[in-house]
Length: 238
Ligand SMILES: Cc1cc2nc3c(=O)[nH]c(=O)nc-3n(C[C@H](O)[C@H](O)[C@H](O)COP(=O)(O)O)c2cc1C
Image (cartoon, rainbow, N blue to C red; front, side, top):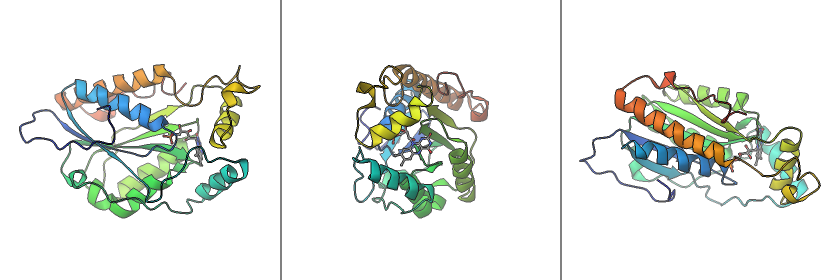
């Protein structure tokens, strides 16, 4: 599943497990991880439907300036303003063996579009379902995960596990680099470039996401508990 915008309608004749992945991605980092995760699940013979969560008014990356980046970070800290999203495709309301809900951390919270999805459609989508949150972040994800898990449980979901990928660069360059990148600068090519060679996730992390997809597929096939899978590896969380 490498073309993320396409929604595949599954045929009734399929025998593998059925997995639905929702994702929002502002700067393509979650998108890259989800692309590999779904490819890994598909290799195992399972069937994926991937639904991109799309804001009604597209959000532009990079944000562009330092003041507007600061403004977005502060407003998202208070989960304001909400980001209205487009309606989901009908196929999202079918029945699945597993749902993955993927998106970035925004100021210690889930991103606005993911919050909008939960607020608008959460009880219908997640009630009685197994949901694995997938987080892409710079490095600070505990509060995000805690809050997201709580919101999903309120919707009636079971959350057997979670997947977190944090950027592999070291601090303080990671924080400075992300901020500059969001503001539309090129930190990799600036004076901090020798400490901050790249924004976002590494190729090695994408391969790890592919491997995680295989683990999920295996567990679904064997009907073994998803809670037993180890996603907290030094590659995902360096
Ligand atoms: C408004 C905003 C706030 C952010 N706040 C955090 C944060 O609190 N903790 C963190 O680890 N990363 C934070 N980040 C960085 C993103 O989570 C990170 O770059 C992620 O990989 C982006 O994924 P995406 O490209 O799929 O949107 C923030 C990014 C934005 C745009």
